[in-house]
Image 1 (cartoon, helix red, strand yellow):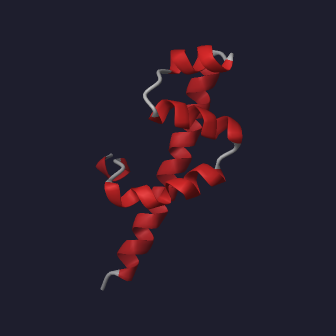
Image 2 (cartoon, rainbow, N blue to C red):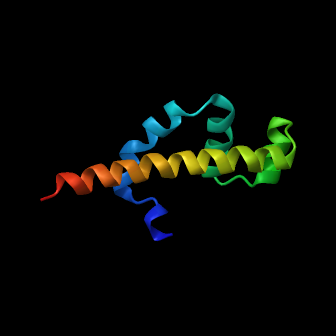
Image 3 (spheres, one colour):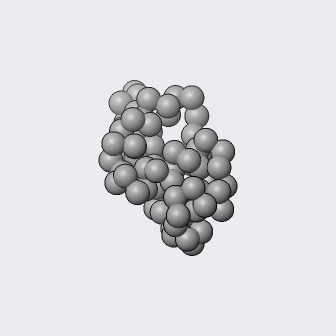
Length: 79
């Protein structure tokens, strides 16, 4: 869904996303955003790769929800 593509306009919501996630979800999202693979994250954190994928899935879903809410709020403010 192209609505879920993060744009430069979405960057201001990143602190809100990170603050609203638990540390375990924030950790994998930040590593992933910095270009690490799930396998590399698992190796660095000592987690199973499936656990990393599960946490990443939740973190991304949560991030998209916040971005979607921000975009809807902006669209309702535009006449």
